[in-house]
Image (cartoon, rainbow over the protein chains, first blue to last red):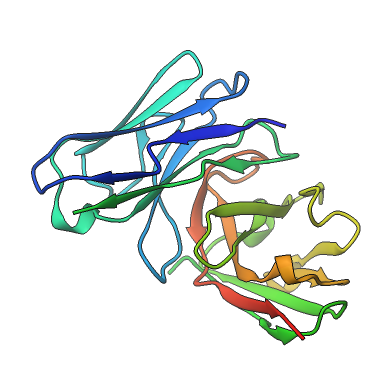
Length: 107
Length: 122
């Protein structure tokens, strides 16, 4: 099974800050990596797919990158509506699509 | 509007059964793989099962294999999750989610339902 190790588990930041969240895959997953934002009581929302492709309607302050099996979500300038929990997901295999543990981004 | 709507959740005793439904609208349902993802209270996301659009390829997480059965009815634009031998650890919000690109088995999940709560308790 492919494990996704996400860090940090929580993060405190301020409006206007630049923040990064990282996921490390236990083995190669090519570009099959997505990022989601989830607010309390709501379904997850797709932000980025294929590492760095922005989903329609998602602000450009969100970006994604990769180095080897490390994948990074960057929010360039935090806005009040960005405080939420973020998850990475690998989908390289249909047998088991796995999510990271989540990062709670707090003010 | 592209939409998924889950139903069928509720309170069930350990060892009991429940059938969840996911009704789709606004897109060519038969072309898309649909997944079930669950989230236990206060916890992260766990992929549960998937069914492809055309060839009906089916996959399960080890945690539900042998107890849950996924199916789809393309004529009714619906996916179902039959859950048997339920355990306390199956308590979660269950979401259905569509893959991003039609015809793809593996892909990000771009459309999610609102979720339906399943509680397994005596």
